[in-house]
Image (cartoon, rainbow over all chains, first blue to last red; front, side, top):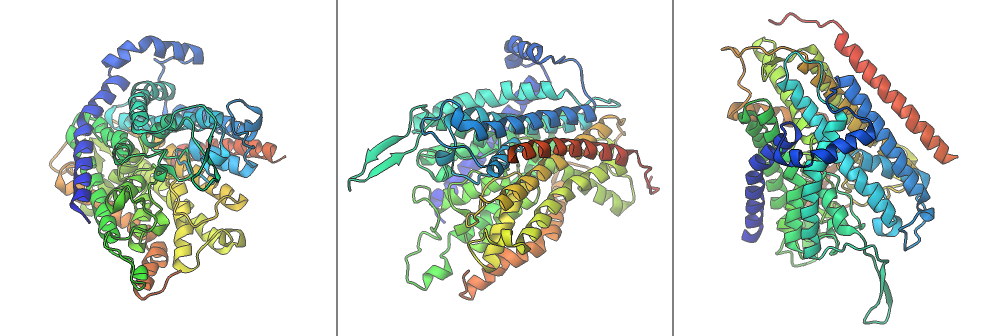
Amino acid sequence: MTWQGWLQIALFAAVITAAVKPLGGYIVANLDGGGRVQRTCAPIERCLYRLAGVDPAEEQNWVEYALALLWFHLAGIAILYALLRLQPFLPLNPQRLDAMTPDLALNTAVSFATNTSWQSYGGEATLSYLAQMAGIVVQSFMSGAVGVAVALALVRGFARRSSQAIGNFWVDLTRVTLYVLLPICCVATLFMVWQGVPQTLGAYVTATTLEGAQQVIARGPVASQKVIAVLSGDGGGFFNANSAHPFENPTALAGVVQMMLIFLIGVALTNVFGRMVGDQRHGWTLFAVMAVLFVAGLGVIYGTEGHANPALSQFGLDQSAGNMEGKEVRFGIGQSSLFATVTTASSDGAVNSMHDSFLPLSGLVLMANMMVDEVIVGGPGSGLFGILLFAIVAVFAAGLMIGRTPEYLGKKIESNEVKMTMLALLCVSAAILGIAAVAAVLPDGVAGLNNAGPHGLSELLYAYTSGAATNGSAFAGLNANAPFYNLTLAAAMLAGRFLVIVPVLCIAGTLAAKRAVPTSAGTLPTYGLQFVGLMVGTIVIVGGLTFFPALALGPAAEHFALQAGTTY
Amino acid sequence: VFDILMLVALALGFVGAAGYIRACVDLTRAPAGGNAP
């Protein structure tokens, strides 16, 4: 660990914290409040509604909202699947890349439509520029916007009184795209181009090396894709090496800005929540819960990676810099640890180091970050609705302790909300553990592993955790481009996204229909340090109880084996 | 053939999702138990 590393982490934390309030205010003003940007761009917005046949004044109940969302994603998956299968016959394919296999195309279409960006392929060797721009980038925008839309619908559920409506899906989708994602992307793309990220439709370049060999150097419209990938919580890489590739992440500054973009909308939405429910303390409380969990995870990872790998020490290797295996020398331990924590705490999945090479304890934290259901900032929107689910569990548990019907923000949390919350939380756990268990015993699943023992289990568990938590980062070491993994991971991603979103919208609907209950002496304060502690405890206990056995068999067992000199 | 199967699977997935929404609606209509104040 170095002072430069700590300074970098402190600067990152300071900028992110400083951005919460202004960006939250901007989002509320322009999505729900008739802000200046919204008023200026209103003609464009109206034109889009007219083209799509949408009446922006017509609000939807939760079932209508959910059906619109599902139709939208069904169409998105079908279009992306067709683009990937037909790319040899479509333009903007200067490298004449072949079509994806059907199972890989389905996996990729589902992956980007669900905001996961799990990639069983190397982008530069597989996708045409058209597939990258009209397929991957469009889905990055749309899946990010859908996450924010669902979060807004849930917040309206808390904020509204005796209402059947939770907003209009098409309006939310349009406004998030036009007023939040596009402006930030335009500015950040220019910044990335300035830092050295390529942005061209020209073909790959062939260079002659000093030894006289021919080397093909891949390039393309990288900057525009990279920015929306990190901003939308998508995280897919233009190149196979993702943010470890010098064209995708050319400087340390570019790396820090990418991490900020990953967290930006997720943290700002806590302030959006506070503003929309009329008390910003509730937003800051959720932000504090995220911060506590994030700092705890980062501390373990930075502390672990700052020390030598005992398996390499026996060979007399100089490990004074820490465990540098699988990490870019340009970024070192500090930025690699920070990036790994940021990408797994959010639902992003971009990587600048190989998580497979992190020491087992770090691997455990990386998995745990994803297993707690995207609540440590999470993806845009999905982080907010994820942590609100835990807030419902926390007030429910507190209500059980004192024998009162729990309340949150003046709304009684009754059996309907608790049933839907448990359904949403259990679906992700069941998808991760259930499908991973099947893969661990079937020959097709075991055939994809490159390591035996606990490390092999970690590779497998990480893959399904990443899929179901819609993260998309890879542990590496798993040969995932096989029909078995492509199809089962697609199932995990669909379950992790839509089996959660539907109950969340249902909660929004039932809450919006309720009247507010006046605060009394018996009301549990849902802001402040006490509630932060209650929520952190709930998240850790629920996550720990659910996943501890699997983590004990994987990274925890590997940690103790490594200390005893055994590697896998 | 696989492409057609994929499209059929997607359509079935949508039907399944609609059924899931219906199940959620039914769950929220089920009578609540308990007697907390």
